[in-house]
Each structure stands twice: as C-alpha cells, then as structure tokens.
Length: 308
Image 1: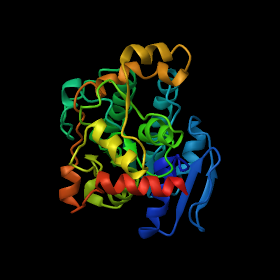
Image 2: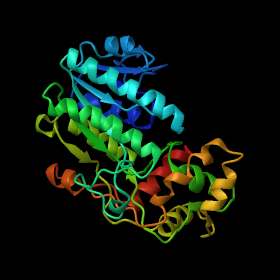
Image 3: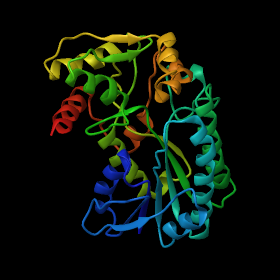
C-alpha cells in the first residue's frame, strides 16, 4: 500500500497517476479525496487530527506528505507542526517510509543564487522558519534511527491546470484576459521553475528507491534557467500575445496587501525575486539519469493542456 496525504493537490493528483507503475494498492487521503485511478482507495480525513492521520497511514509501506495549506503564515504556524508530528508518529508506529514534498524557503538568502541539497539552512522569512521547523522534526527522527524518510524539494512550480502556480495566476491568466502578464521586483533576474509532471514522476521514483531514503533531493528542474522576462516571452509567443510585462515593485505589493489577503503574504518572500533564483537538481538528474522537461516544452504543454 502506498498512501498520499493531500491527494487532491497539484502534485498529489499527478503522483497518483505515476504510482501504478510501482504498486496496485494506492490510498488517497484528504478532506474529500477523489479517485484518479479506478482501483484507488479513498480515505477522507482531517490531517490536523492525529488519530485520523494514524488510521489513514495504517497498513502503508510508503507515505507521501503532499499537503498544501492556504498561503497564510498563521495557518502554517498552527497547522504544519501538528500535521508533521502526527505523520511522523504514525509512520513510526506502522513502520512506513515517509516522503516529504518540501520547498526552498528554509535556505539562507545567500544560497538563493545557487541552491543545492547542501545549501545553508537559515530561513530569511517567517514562512521559511515554519518549513525549517517541520523539516528538522523529520530529520531528527531519521538521525535517531526511528524513521525512514526523505525530503524531496521543489523550486516554484508550474504545469497544466495548476492554480497554485505564480506563472499560471499572473502570467497565463492575465494573457488570456488580454492583460499584461505580471512579474515581481525585477524581470531580468533568473528564476527556476520545476515542471509539475516531472516533480510527480521524480517523487514516485524516490519513494520506490530504497537507497534514496535518509537524504534530501532536489526534484528535476531544467538547468537552463531563464529570466522572468524570457519566461514570459515563451508564454506570449505561444499564446500569440504582445510581448509586454508589468513589473510589480515591493511598495505596490504592500499596498495591494491592504486589500488582497494573498498579497499581504508576499512581501517577505520578495528576496526570491530581487536576485537570481537558481535551483540545482544535478544530484537527482545524474543519479537517476533523468532529463528534466525544458522550459520551452513545459510552457507549450502547460498552455495546450490548461486550455482544454
């Protein structure tokens, strides 16, 4: 049995399509899980309730923690430690291997220009502090020999039908509406993006590779990192739109935050846009002989499949 916690999210639904290559028993867990494969087992649960998490994990060989909480600091501070603690405890009790899908918020601000699995951990934001807290919870149990687990980290991601993606929300959707696509702070800085189908495929590979556990892995990401302006040009060219862009400065984000709750959460993360943001996945790519999807192909497929 392989179990996905947060199964209806962006990565969870794609991961569920990959897992039949490795198992014929897949359990999808969430508040209102929906089948991806005909034989999927659905397990409704509130993952902030430890007793429900324990029941959801019972009988599992591999557990994937892919929960996506609202992008709100207070929610993260309240819920993430509870979810992680419950998941760790249940995996230890049932001798299940744990795969945690993580982001890069815990890395030191000086590491953003070239992030590897060995980059310094020193989060420059409050959200990053939460990510460090929960990653440390997992790694301490691994170090103690109580838990078999790994961390799979992704850069900001994009892909078909992905409303959690910055590129979909303020680039693709703006172009569809006849508006200028947006970028934050400086469109001439490079910024890596992980393609969601690649991330899901790689997460499944890691979860089913015994010697991958006990490590941190960066998920496969095109090494030919583009600037924001170049990335937007791929969208405008593919969508036959004017190659124009509106760059939002930090002061405008703070102003918009007075009226738009999501924008209130953004200013502390803008250090990721005022410098190059380069995500290095050469460890995974080399170990598994994996060729990440190019940005050119990824944007083309994202537009074609999101439009359907």
